[in-house]
Length: 84
Image 1 (cartoon, helix red, strand yellow):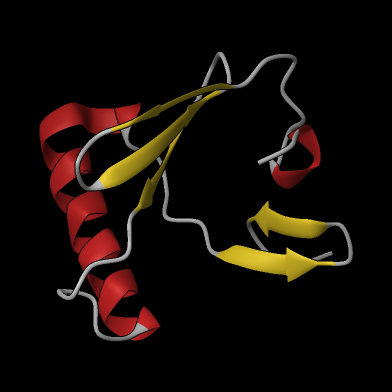
Image 2: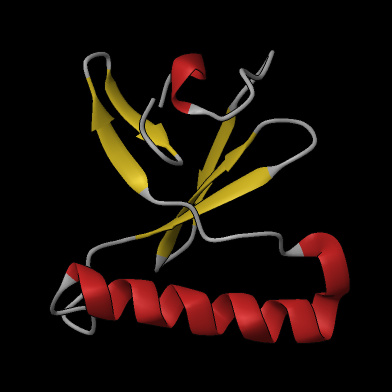
């Protein structure tokens, strides 16, 4: 994802991945995008899992885990967060 995809345009983006997720490190933040899986049979189910992971992350890691953001389609491609 390019710099325009983030809520605040980062100076640098570092990409990494695990078996189940992609990670985009932008300095102050890490954005985690879950890979496609048979577990998530619909976007609603995938969001429900993400919200539960957020709840557990906030319980165990405090303010390290901040939010679940939607990936939206824009004229430039894709972006994190609400359109516009």
